[in-house]
Image 1 (cartoon, rainbow, N blue to C red):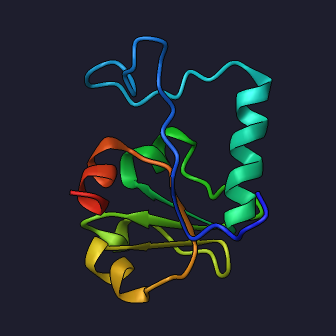
Image 2 (cartoon, rainbow, N blue to C red):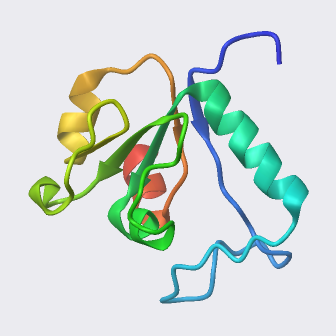
Length: 115
């Protein structure tokens, strides 16, 4: 990749083309190559965006080496960490007009970002 990333959508699909079982928020990644690729591509972007449920799935902590934005209806429910983690509404995130970011889920966030 020689050109800088701007807006990137990362979707982890199962072999039968689903994001995950209905009603479940589990990543289920076991392949080290998949994890390494995800880490590399999101660090290249420098900023990840996720929904609250995805944030809970990854352990309620920011992914290191990237600015993490959590989209939620209740930003006060997630404590900010200067330079690492910020929770905000979708409208407030859009107002930031960030030049580069990587959307990493979940389904509701994908749908809201790209209707």
